[in-house]
Length: 121
Image (tube, rainbow, N blue to C red; front, side, top):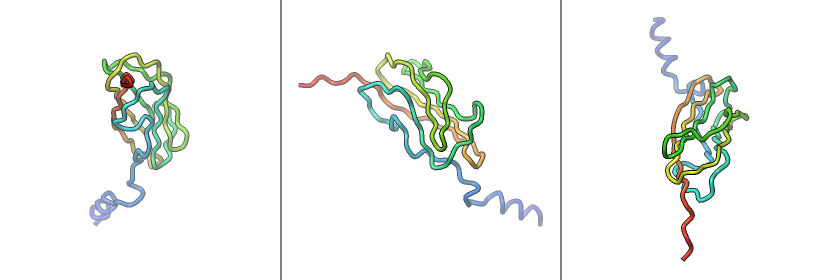
C-alpha cells in the first residue's frame, strides 16, 4: 500500500514537479547579430534559487573558447553574464545550468550567430 502511494506522488504532474522553462533569451535563440552583444540574459518562467555556482551561463566562440566573463548573476527569474569582446564571426554556443525555485536543475544549450554586417548594394 505504501508503494502505491509513493508511486502516485512521484508521478504527479502538478506544480511541484514543474521545472523552470526559458521564456526569453538575449541574444535570441538562433538569431543572427551584426553587432556583438555585451552580455547574455536568460529569463525563465520561475524565480531561480541564488546559490553559489548553481546558476551558470557559459558562452563559447566558434573555436570553443570561453568568452563569458565573471560570474553569472541571478535577479529573480533572470540569469545574466557579461561577455568579453567577440573577435570571431560564426556560431556561438550558450550553455546554461539553473536551479529553479522548486529545486530542480535545468540544463540546456542554444546558439546564436555573430556575423560581419553585409555591405549595402
